[in-house]
Image 1 (cartoon, rainbow, N blue to C red):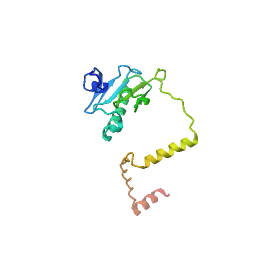
Image 2 (tube, rainbow, N blue to C red):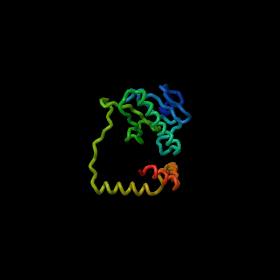
Image 3 (tube, rainbow, N blue to C red):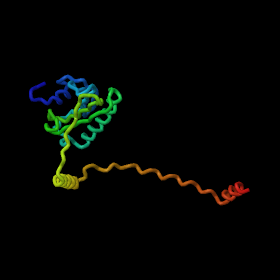
Image 4 (cartoon, one colour):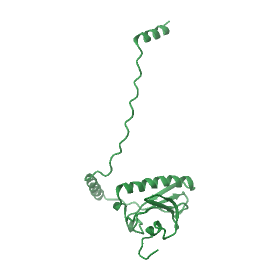
Length: 175
């Protein structure tokens, strides 16, 4: 790997060896060489983006759609009881290399993977301030377009029996 080159770009361009389990025109998925658990997979966009905010929306949608599909296959193939899908933005969130990357980590109840935090007890004033700021930010634009749900076909209306048929039916039933 050339000095200063992004590790994930080097893996994508085959300048760094990897155990590639999936590849398409936009992404690769490789086994992590320092896994949290067996079956730990890294999903990497082929194009260099530091965060999902830089990615075209269709590509970031494809990334998370792919992660869901790969997660399903990992759960089928690897003995596990669950799976974490982890994506961090910035060093404080665990992003060690400035390139988009999603971790898919199979989990067992007795494994040594720790994803934990001490909950804070926000003051009501701070909570309200954050709530208002988020609601205000979300009002400025449509975040996600609503999904068009197919309209159900109306149930067929049963044909009403003709008056003569009803009379014949009643006549047969009445002694």
